[in-house]
Amino acid sequence: MSTHANMSALEEARGRWNCGDLDGYLRLYSADAVLHGYANVPPWLSGIRQFYEGFCSAFPRSQIVFEDVFAADDRVACRFVIRRSTWASSRVYRLQGNRSIYQESPS
Image 1 (cartoon, rainbow, N blue to C red):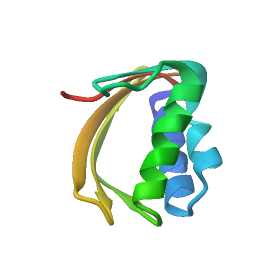
Image 2 (spheres, rainbow, N blue to C red):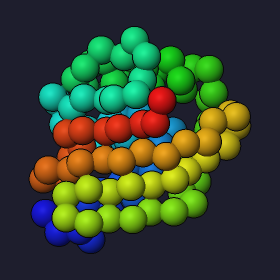
Image 3 (cartoon, rainbow, N blue to C red):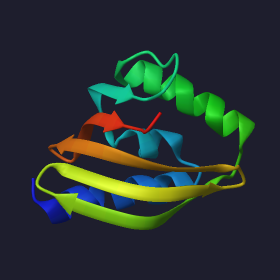
Image 4 (cartoon, one colour):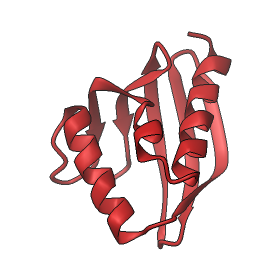
């Protein structure tokens, strides 16, 4: 996939999150995606879903705001804040076929 397509996939996921569509947001992730830098989050989509269901329960109607997005080849990096929480972070995604197969978060 092109760099532009990968950035578009991330933007689509942000839009789904901001509409309260967790299922739509989770389409960003492949079934065998792995999150790195998250404590006690099991691998694969089932663990990712469990993590974000808990997050959405704790912070309903939260909004992702991208501050910076950079892409090269199959990697997209973004710095963002989540409104309605105190969480600000950055992520590096590795995408394959417009789906994240790897996500790294600084510890």
